[in-house]
Every structure is written in C-alpha cells, then in structure tokens.
Amino acid sequence: MKPDALAALERPARLRAELELKKLAAFKAHVDAAQGRVDASRAAMAQSYAAEAPLSVAEARMANAQAARAARELTRADRELRQIEPRFRQMQKQAAREFGRAEALADLHQRAVRAARKAAE
Image (cartoon, rainbow, N blue to C red):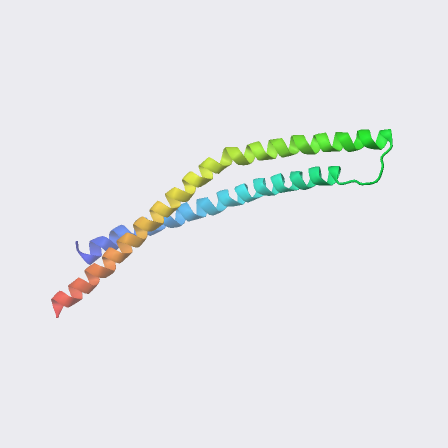
C-alpha cells in the first residue's frame, strides 16, 4: 500500500484512539469516585465499631444507628461500583483496540515510507 494512503488511514485512526482514551479517562474518574465512596463507607463502618470505651444505652443506640447508616451507604456504593466496572472494562478494551489499530497503521506507514525510499535509491 502507498505511504500516502496509509498516512490518510492513520490520521483518523489516531483521532479515534485519542477520543477513546479521553472517554476512558473521564469514565475512570467516575470509577475512582465510586471507589472512593466505597472506601469512605468502609472507613466509617470500621470507625463505628472501633470504639473501645463503654457506652451508655443511648450512646450504643446512636452508634448502632450510625453503623447501620454506614452499612447502607457501603452497600449502595459497592453496588454502584459493581454496576459500572463491566462498562469500564469494555471501554478499556475498546481504547486498547483503537490505540493498537493506530499504532499498527503508523508502523505500516513507516515501513511503506522506508520501502519507497529504498525503491527510489
């Protein structure tokens, strides 16, 4: 294939790869935020069970209510993370595929340029 034709194919492939990588980065921020919520909920639960001082009945009820709220938040955050992870994995594969395609076309373009130079000599 001619170097010019390969260069013409490489440019849109690079643009598609860049677009996929940008989409992946944006979605990764969403995944990181969800993971942060899971971690924060786990820390809140651990903190609610970490009290070593004896509690009065009212304090025990309050601690139990806080632990229950932290457990609900952890369940919700964990569910959200599990729901978005498959889409994130799919987006990673798509970005890798587009990047690989662009790299392959760049390599073919470079080989075609070298072959054209060699043929011209």
